[in-house]
Length: 227
Length: 204
Image (tube, rainbow over all chains, first blue to last red; front, side, top):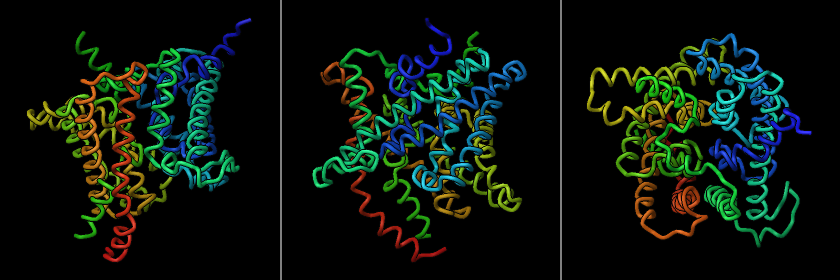
């Protein structure tokens, strides 16, 4: 039986994985994947924001006037990110130290406003929450995977447990270049085995790929002007 | 003065916003097909980031911090930056159409460029810069962004002529080029401790 709610989970985790297939949210993916545990904590923070923002936006979808919806979404998301940031700072100071500004920058993560715009403002709260869980988990899995590979190759550990001695590790993998290398490798593998990604949009957009909030607003203005 | 120059160098070359901090990756990968467009985007980023850093820093030290509203800074900053870009756009359209023509289409892109918000927050949270320092830090960061995106555009204009294996075409080859650039920029990291000690020595 194909349940609509289960389908959202499958969609977010695999079919439209936000990072690996849709190629959204590249900044945090590259930045915080230095260790698998950082990938998990960043992914879960984003997941929390995404579930709440999808829920709130879906609940308020009939209240928010269409013309000002993007600024309204930004305020909702920014408030949620502030809440999450303060909670992490209070209860998980080590996570706060490891992720730093990148927690604040969840607010400009394309995935969150992208889902609000593409899904939550058209569907019921229940489905939107499931969509948030699916997309958030997809993001977490992708981040953890990238962190896992970089940590393993860069320091010879997995979640802090030693797999092979550090002398054999390739230090550059946990340095900035390693991030580009590992993500490039992921896309090459996906291309080679024939999984279709939207990477074309990543490198050949004129900026308006519907990925970013104000940019989406701009694209709509452009569309209206051409009409 | 020396302090301000050091801040610019630190932000432009050593902790390069794209290659080291991974901010603004979307536009870095998306708008780097042609050198001319990249340079225009870079100019627009320099413009907006300098102003945004100034406004954010002033707003924080004059309004938010005295009122004890530190926790509001993200919400305020993102709205202020969005509004600021709109104002700059309208101003340029009216006062200097030639500049608007060159930069216009890139201005709205910058609003969501996480680098602008990132540096506005970093100036306060991470570095604790004062107003003037924040302005120079924003300027330096934007210069670093421009250097990186123009260089990448240069590489890409050569790469498209090559026969690349099919799976590597598109995003992967661009990222591999970025990885090599990032390795090159790591050469500057040796300077980081030197500059940081110098910054402490020079004082305010």
